Amino acid sequence: MGNAVLLQLLRLSGEFFLTHEAQASLGFVGPALLVAVTVGVRARRAGLAVGAAVMFTLLMTQA
Image (cartoon, rainbow, N blue to C red):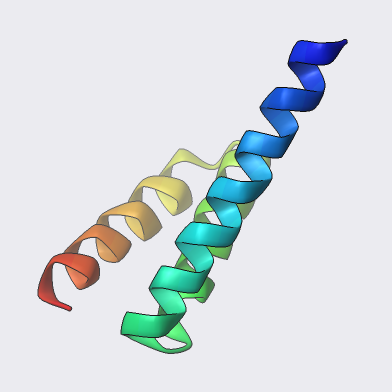
């Protein structure tokens, strides 16, 4: 039980940090790509998740 709560807190703080950093350097596109990755993983659409993750990575290396 305690591990599940800790895991959720870590995931939530990671999502918040990534979204904040992406928005600071990429504007609206960063969080939109992170949402696309999350939706792709949850919907089990590997193409969407991988494509959005690759685009996010490329944009973050250029920022």
